[in-house]
Image (cartoon, rainbow, N blue to C red; front, side, top):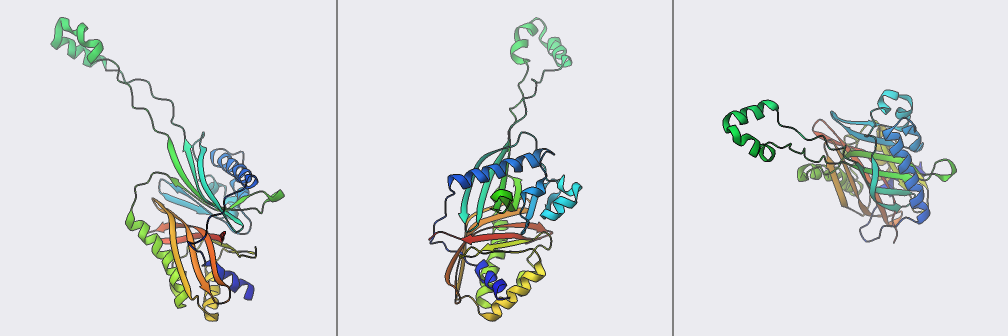
Length: 320
């Protein structure tokens, strides 16, 4: 019990005074291999998607025409129809990433792009319109036809762009990387300060709850299934929570043992696209048992009705 409570105390710590840890060449190569397999799974049937998620805890969400679809690793494995909804157009590729190391996690944002299809054939004026022109212009028809009634080129199609927020752990076979969380949505969504404010409001309530000791409100802000709350403590231990009721129970036990003396969260990157949102940031807290602690974190939210719910939050100790 003490070990679980210890993990919960660490979950809410992250500081703005530390620097992000860059990936080593070996880590980057491992993440690139994981992302390549992820693209294969999303664009074909050659790679089962569930294999790319951690068995410790997982939550995947993808935007759809109707809103979103979310699933855990076990659901992706057991429900073929559900897994089939996690798809992207063929030809989609990774075009960039901004990733950092946070304890045992690699977390951040990945940019994807589906190249535009070949431009459509030119749109040619209908013969009936040419006949009408000739009736009015007479002999001048031939003079102006090529210039005024020439085929009109169709506008060049735009490539599709996607935003993917991930957290990954090195717990696969032969120490390969697997995702704990993945949120995939169309990129370039218009900025909506109101929606961003609502999302940050949920994280702020976590920030305050650990200081004031009131965790009752947190239970109503958690997505029931899937849910993935994960943390790597400074000593390297990993803890994952996938059940909302169990997590809130442990949080209650935590605050009964003593509240944080200080807890401050700031975001470095908020992205809202439709009914999916993600926040990358840092959380700084001073806890009597541990002193000052720092986590870098990534969190994902989904909108159910008029409410945003926390789907995942993963973090680990940042470099001092």
